Image (cartoon, rainbow, N blue to C red; front, top):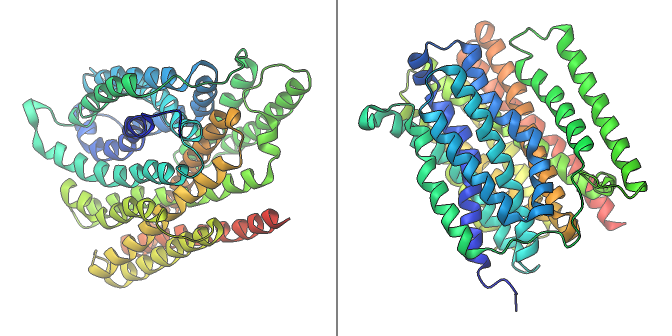
Length: 459
């Protein structure tokens, strides 16, 4: 018998809270034109509205996982909810674009406290037979967020409720966070490490700085035409990441507190899982290019744009729910998921090249790709988290979240750069077809990594 009788109720509130993190990414993209008009914002400022959220989230998510290990996952999850609630209100009532950007930064801090607690709590609250179902439920919220963010964003922007326009995409967070704050209070214990240790502030500073220096150049490289100092920052970020790793090894040898146990980064199967997670999140490029293509080339309104992404998002939502009913090995399911991603995006590229406009064939292709995404995500999360001891669950969850976020940022930047830099020379349809094909090509890396993972597990 499981010692946590309310674990399924707790999972409902944990996933609802975690749902806010990806939702806010998708929904804000839809509101950028309205924000630009409201504040006469520059393109650079609009880019910061999006980037500062993902940047803060990626840089702090491991710290969020570690804080959950030390002080209790319920406590840190609740803190994340309060931060997300207050920052959402601050965003909605921002008097100027600078205030909005700062508020978005605090939203990213709140989000970094939410997601790591979910996977870590699943590892602790559920026994091994229940974990696949719990992870599948959690994974499905990402697919739901991709649909809800695009569709709800378009609907809210057209609603003009009480003289609000773009503000509604932030106000919609308020009832969800309040519900989660109350629900998690009554349904979850404050599970944490039995042995509490001080926080590794030096390690945290090194990791946050290195991640910022790696992610910022990726985000802003195209804006500054990939100047030499962009690459200098990237190299510095890699150097600091190495320094961080060496520091954590020495701290472990001296029995000092660490942010991430070096054993996690020396655990080859776990690192291979992180690599696959990194590459399949290059699919974020679709959500950058497709809305732009529909609105700028085909002159679709926000609601029509949101509807166009439904086939992908619906399949993304269904995929995790199907996983618990399919009796195949994890490695087989990874191959199936990657195969669907590769074939779906390849077909979509062909159809947009030939037809230029969305069609039933395009919808089917996106559905296949979304199904692949929905299948591989819970399998990889379950595979990665199962490799790690319970006491390291928060750190492992933070690393998984970093892989997701850095994959999304890197993939979005590479795919977006290919798309935007070839529009003038190739035209909109061919540029978009090329960008979609690039997403498929990057998934091939996952196939080779999974082959290596399978060989390692047989040893």
